[in-house]
Length: 145
Image (cartoon, rainbow, N blue to C red; front, side, top):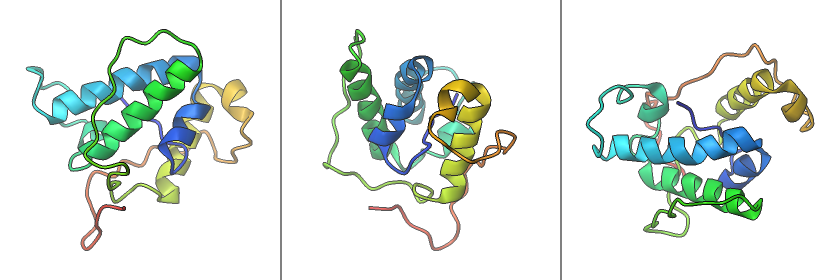
């Protein structure tokens, strides 16, 4: 389970994803939302870092999910998933959103998964770079507007 954010912008992140990953992002974002809302009986993913990092940032995750849906539809693919309602046009982002360390780790992982496709973006990250899971908020940090 993962949400891929190679850029500090949900729409740019969705736009650069290959077909396979973009399709899965719609499902994974929706599943994370369900887990965080307690709408699933399964406890399997409840403590996964990809879920924990979004805790408290559910509205931002809804925005990312909607960005993935919009990109999917703009490419002409059939969509049966409904967009999420947002309480604000631009909900606050999690504290880690915009941190270069975070987005670089996502670019590296995408390069590792498909070097030919993601190599076209000119990213310089080492594909061996490990994920950085931002599951614990540093003291004094707050969501980004």
